Structures are given as structure tokens and as C-alpha cells.
Image 1 (cartoon, rainbow, N blue to C red):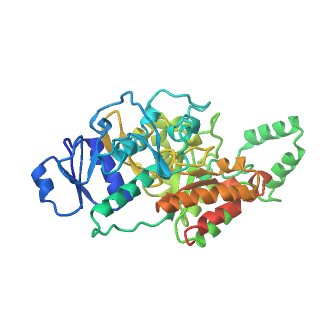
Image 2: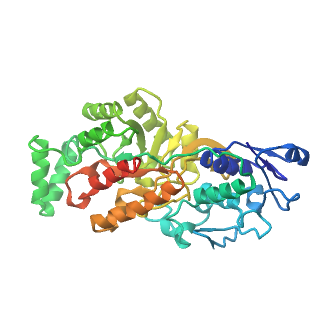
Image 3: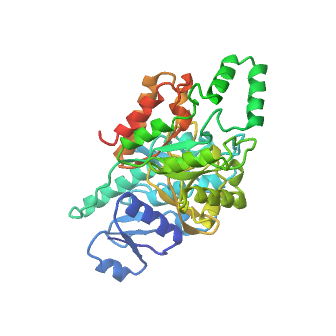
Length: 432
């Protein structure tokens, strides 16, 4: 156990030390404000305060972990060996940056509470992030800092054995609509037909009716492939089904259709199933509750996992609503058009509510890749190269790789050519 001496045991201090020490490094941590208890402790120990007590392992603290609410922080990002960091704390500290304060800033999503420019869907975009602006979005900096902290501790306490952590993959299959043409109803089929005719898309019209009459397979129906891949893989896929109402943004299938319910039940026999919450549920807890209850009726068990449609989050309301409805895990934290680490970490972390200054039970599982982000790489070789770099970054810190693919990504459409190869590379990366 690591004992931390500090002048004040604040909720922020407890939150970030437990993430870095326990979740990333696998070491239990405890806190004291009593010097005599600190001196008596005969194992791993450090002081985290403004001035060192003597010659102990000391990290000079930044004020952010002892404050409440938001303040106007000056963030000066600097190069630190093979990475970047901020909150420089001088040469007297055992490590030159306050990694705990910097990690709290990243994990709490402090910057997302501040005024910012959002995209047309109201989403926080990668180009507005500290990581993008300072060229460290491609690195899991929180985990990298944690391992630098571990190396410094190991030097001071060479006999202490740190537990080993292993690289993991948690593939996500997002299902906004299980079929492109089937189960859409008469009015939507008629609307699609008129649109195809008005735009002279005769091939699309042929495919639509050939599918509806059962002559060819629906292009979005790739579930046999997904199940076969799951059977060949030792770790579980997580499939998010959309079951909300039809709207301007969400155009899924009505959950009252028995064939759709059967499909969800069938997939749940092989994979884990979660709720893809609708666009309008992001800020509306009543809609979110209704969708949660509908999904629980389908899967016949409590719903534990969710992710919001369009990867849209409204901080902190979206997460507060999940906490209120006792949903345990969320997979919305990431950027759709950029590979990388929105919260600076590839280790799941708990949501810290900055308004209420409290750690919640909601586990945030950040994703690092969405299939759309790979479309900017035109060749399959470039896609594989970008993927390889990302996997290497995660493997260096034994993190969890969470890639998001859609059911239609595995279709025969030209746009998604080669994506099955990309998916296979991700699955194989565990055994490399």
C-alpha cells in the first residue's frame, strides 16, 4: 500500500490518486494528514503538499486538487522526455510536473465545462481540445505519466513489487439501424423510393426492392459475420442497439417489431448488449429512462451499459442522468473524426462531477477509434499504419483498446472496403 501525506485530503486528491495508483498501477493507496503516521509507515510512501517534510519521496502539489468549482487556470504545456505535460512544479519535486493535478484536469474533462465552440450537433470537437492544440491527443498521457511516477517510486523503493497489468481489447459494435431497407414500414419505404427516383439512383432502387422481396441480403445485416467473429474470440464484443423513437437525427427500427426484438435477443446469446441512447436523450432523463426500460424488457435483465447517439455528450448532465438511472458504464467518451485519447487515458475511470465535487459510480470507458476516423486514410496500408501506431501507444501502458465499428462497416459497400481486415488486426493484437 502507498501512503500519501498531504495537508488536506480533498475529494479531488482521493479521486485522482486512486485512479493513478489503483486503476492504472494496481497499488492500493491511503491518505494521512498526520506526520507521525507517515513516519511510522514502513512501505511505499510519499508526500503531496507545498513543501517536503525532509528527504522523502515528494511531489509538489498544484492548487487545483484543493479547490472547488472551476477557476481560470493557466495551462502551459511543456515537453517531458517522450511526451508532454503541464503544471510544472520545479526541480525539488521527485517528478518535474504535478501529474496528479494534470491527470485530474484531463479525467474530469475540466476543459469541457469551459466555454467552447461546438460542432453542428453540439459536440465538443477534437480541434478544441488541449491534446489536439498541443500535439498529445495521440498519446494516453495520463497512463504515461502514471508509469513515469511508477519508475520514480521504484527507484526510491527498489524492493517493492508492482503488479502487472495486461493489454485488453473491448470491441464495440454500434447499431443505429440493423437494416438499410427491411422493417422500415410502408411510409419510409415509399419515401425512400421517391428519393431514389428523384435522384436517378436506379441501382439503389433495384437493391431496395430486391432486398424487400428476399432476393438479396440487406446490406446492413452483417450479424452472422459478427457472431462468427465473436465465436472465434475469447473476449466479448459489446453491441449497442438503438431502440428510440424515429427523429430528424435517429432513423432506427421500431422496437415494437418482433423481428427486431428477436435479433437483439439472438445477439445477446453471443455478445454483451447495451443501449444506444437517442440523440434527444442526451439532456432528457425521461426519454433516457423510457429507452432503458424498453431495452430491459427485451434483454430480460438490468441494463448496465450505454452510449449516446452521435457520440454526443452534454457535460455534466448526460453523465448525471446515467448515474440517476443506475447505468454503470458509458462508452461515449471519444472523438468520431480523430484517433486518440479525449480524456488522455486508455484506462476506464469514474465520472467526477465538478459541480458537486463528488466521485460517482459511473465508469467511463473511453474509445480511441471510430471507423469513420479511418476514412480519411485512403489506402488500406495507411489505415493499418494509423491503427498500428494507436495499438502500440495503448500496449506501452497495458491499457484497454476500445474501437467502435458499425454493423454496416462490415458490408460490401466500397466505402468500407478493407475494414474487415482492420477489424481482424484489432482482434489479433491481443495475441501478438
